[in-house]
Image (cartoon, rainbow, N blue to C red; front, side, top):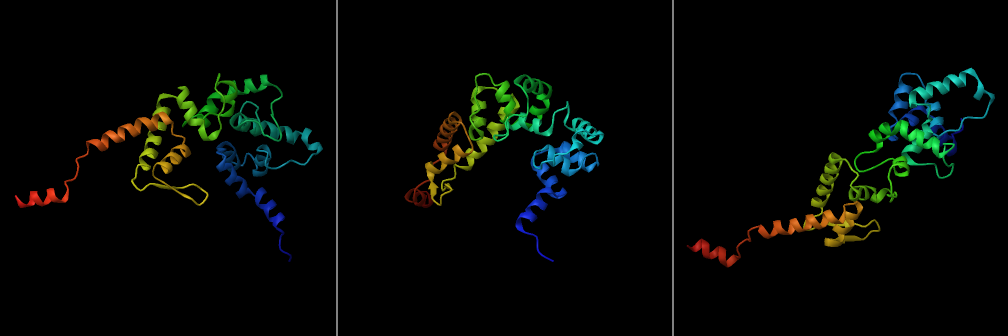
Amino acid sequence: MAEDSPVTSRRQQGTSRAYILDRLKRENRTDFIDAIERGELSAHSAAIEMGWVKRPPSVAAVTHQARKRKLRLEAITGAGLSAGQMMELWLGPNPSQGSLFSSREELEAAWTAHRDELMARHGSHGRRPMSWWELAAGDLEHPGYATERSVLWRAGVLAADERTTLEREWRQEFQTAQAPDFTLDDGNGDLLKGDCARAAYYEHHDIPRELVKRWEKAERRRRGRQPVAPSAPQEEAAAAK
């Protein structure tokens, strides 16, 4: 029996139930996972709704079975939005396909209806869904994933507990970089050392410069208060007494 070609193997992997469930877990789509495990939705249908698999065009799109499937998906995703539309509210429109909403008014209505759910899922720990940036950020512009948290921190829009948790995480990373022999691989095979390594580490973790300066100042004060170890002659003199 001939072995499957690499293309066939990848296609089978990409449409298998196990693969789709694993990918849904990575996307944090517990609504679809629960529906699949309850037998309310097939893994293949979930993959179609997520845009990972294309449904072959057929007259079935207007059949009673298709209408039942649509109602079932609406019950799972809520308020009649498709999984793709919910994903767009989270991550923004697909760069190649464009928006799945027919108008800005429809987008705004979807955001209003699902704001609490989106913020609970994707609006914590210094991050915000793209629909928030588009419709609720005011004059703020999305700076990109790498610096999103520091921009929101500076803008003062984080909840108090969210800000505290984020600053605690940053402080831990700052402390990690205080090791006297701290080094960092720059990703190109070069090894950064000392202050250069620390600066690159702070940038990687998006630690605001204001916090770095404050903590560095406190670190210098702490080190200045540490008792100075006696030199060898002093130790010998003390031992002779």
